[in-house]
Image 1 (cartoon, helix red, strand yellow):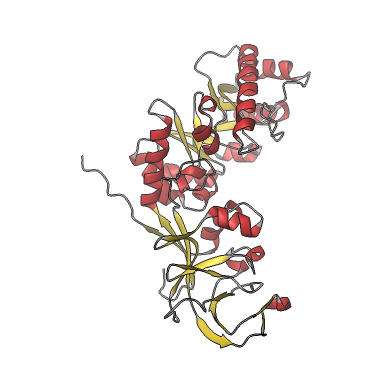
Image 2 (spheres, one colour):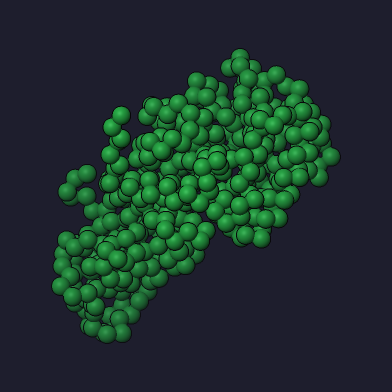
Length: 378
């Protein structure tokens, strides 16, 4: 990264390793663990995240794109790769040599996967998605009269090797997860009988929140994504955010009370103020909805974002920060000293989940990895 870079994303690989240890200690050593690295590890980078998982012996990962799977193989990952969304036929065929287990999303999609398997001239390992939890996205619905026949066709297809039955929770609510878990267990058992599937077929639906909050949701496999990166509403206070969005102050000016600030004159100063310009805007992935609502950290103190931010800059009020100067570090997400801008802060102030922002930041800005764990000497 150039010293002239105005904004960057800092990834703490040590925090990812710490979070993995915490989550595993909560789940127990016997729980089969899938580390989800979709969306380039939620923006944290597969190249930064996967070595941590591999070093800890994680042998199943969840991805969405072929590029992610290819990167995992390039990094030396030899374990199982599960795609955690439905894929197009062309994607499945292109991924033929990567060994991806596909998420099978319904009867029509089963025919797509079957056609891809015929092109590849080999069976494809699949996980059949059920709509037990009411997400109503890609799962087969138990109340659909065609479901038994479709499961029978899947069972009879030599192109489809059923290795899992899966679902996904729509809410981070413990009671909702318990109800969904009960429904999934019953429906998955029924589906397994229709498939003639043996005990080696994995049942899985647990996300980070579910696995850490409702133990009965864990079943044969847990899919842990958000908690790896320190972003889950599950009550696990030991988790640490693994990302910071960082910039520097580019200019500071004093303004009298009464001045309006930013586009649409969004704010009016009610006192004489010192305002600082930070070269970060919505083009860098910082949500414009945080203008006038969000906060940043300067010298370990929380300060408000004052204006309706621009494409490549925003304004913060540093009136109450002693000795602030041009070039000082500004943290817009993550920790600075003992202070922190958390996902919950972003979500409260923007009205959207924090992942919509941080999953994109590293695609738009340089990424720097710190605190890489030292490989064990063997």
